[in-house]
Length: 366
Image (cartoon, rainbow, N blue to C red; front, side, top):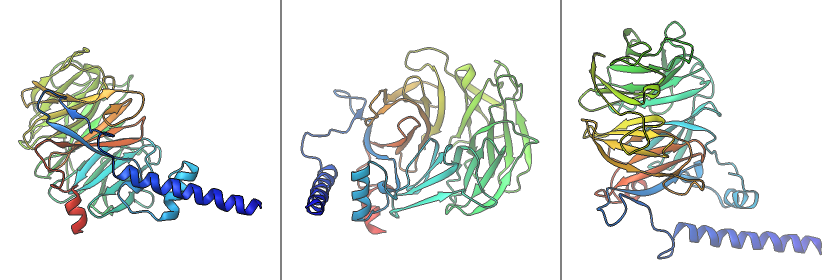
């Protein structure tokens, strides 16, 4: 009798699970309206598209794996984000650093695959934070905060080399690659009691140290707890100067170019700036962990739009502790939230859902 009840209960759970699974993949009309930015009646510029949390979001799972997820509340044999920080994207592959799991997770949406980088061997990671991609060939650069080095992998996660080391870095946190792929820019956050707050420039291939930019201070070209970096198509390198509540721009050779931003709680100002990215037009995307959003500025530092809100539910477009951000070749924006353990993806309104590297068309073609 007990066995029959157990079998009946399992069958019931399976039915509920598969019906729920079907309904979650195909929303009824009116059940879910993706957030758009700016909201109506303004013309939308970005539309929420999807969220990445576990390997199940890109890799097809078995029926048993889906049932285990439903029955236990776990991710089954799927691999999920624990404390994501940085994000970089190359041709539909989404690379996310995870400081708790000490790896970089790769969500390969076009290939319907999932991979883990930096678990062992010479390229083993200890505390990966900032990551960047050479858009010319997919080479991945990871700033390892604890190991005090930059670890370099090819697009498939094979270890290539390491750059820097303890003789240069105290707390390497951010990294960017020049548009031509020849140089990397490494942000060293230093510390509260340290004056070593720098931007380092290295040859991307030989690892030769080319220049050290800035020290601790508030003047142009100086830093106070800098965090992340990004490069624009024209070669401008941007640094999040966190303790000075501003973004600083530098020329290809590291000379000071421009600055924008100030402390405040209004749009266009910063309270806790963190991640940074650029798009193909040279616009600058800045994450603010206190505001729970990212703000978009033109190359002159003028505010264009902000996306997202601070929230406690982790719904699409809601954030408690946003960190890294990336913009892909098609203009899609990827925003990491550490607290909700997710990466939200936003699509430009003028890009059809079936266009670009992350589209369903490409997935079906692979």
